[in-house]
Figure 1 (cartoon, rainbow, N blue to C red):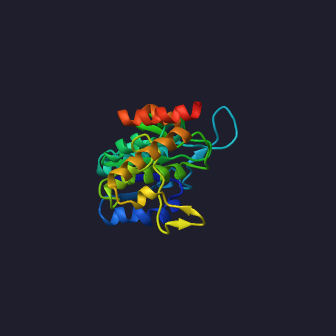
Figure 2: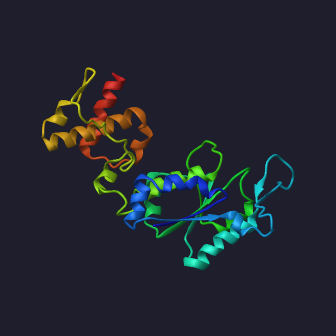
Length: 244
């Protein structure tokens, strides 16, 4: 997966892209990152990339010319990547969408700033993507979230593919509780089933704990989950206890 990042502040990415999972993904040849400074595509000697909004109003708006020139340079250099504008009005990133994006060969992430980008830029991207219903200072933070969520689903990035399957939202369910040594900490003990060595019992316990946690904390996810007959029976028990 090749990520192209279009930004006014490329320095914000250096430490994150050179650490932990993302660094290992690059070392294994599964990930590649290219930072593109939008200022380098400005048309004037002062490299101006923003201007006041037509019609008045507070703040500044990013100009279309440098952004589109940056996007077009990518297509000319290595074939057109899937182009994403990080925007609060975009569709919200989900685990399913992250998986779909991970299957693509390359992504271009366009990071907005200030009061946003000129509306005409939307004609030069393939989709707009949001990380949630809240405001951050710029698209760089959102881009890092997208990079992390997508990268961990690219084959070869994580050491264990099973860890991906077990994570929260992979099956529209929250992950089951995790424990490690010591077996008892300040009076709290690890559940006996995890110490039993019975892998079938452990698998059943984990599935039920995942269902219970989702039922209690994110019941909206259950509408999208793939449930077995045993899952539905267990959820019916939980509802009976809650309502009784």
